[in-house]
Image 1 (tube, rainbow, N blue to C red):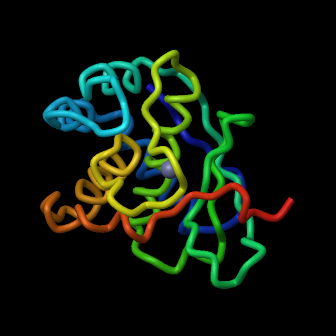
Image 2: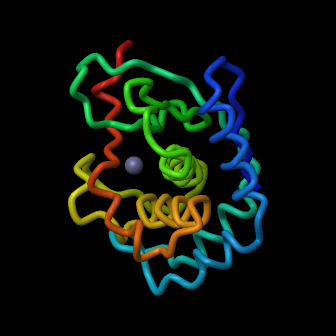
Length: 170
Ligand SMILES: [Zn+2]
């Protein structure tokens, strides 16, 4: 399975990283992905993606950045040039633990995608109508499992989760 590491000093990120690892180690997490009928913007089936994530042995590192724009709505991003890094915007850490874990898992799906011959992203950085793509759906699954809320209650959260490398500071 994939693992996420964070060696910085930011307590909520340390805790979110731990919780992301607990999810990535849970058979239930992959079983839930397999129950999804299909994901949009990919030819890969949910079963393919669950198998791939379960077998992926990448070690990801969480890096913090502060978005150049104070009004940036980006929670974080993944950069295919650095597939083993997950970038989180420090301006956007004042939210629920489940939501931060959801962002880490969303970016981890991008990392698994970057490590595989399959393609299962969400196209442009706009989050509108992307809730049924693999990164958003699986990120929302993480939010649901960590918050112990029904999936339907968190399914609309995608609108607030952007990831845009262009917004990061160099
Ligand atoms: Zn994304």
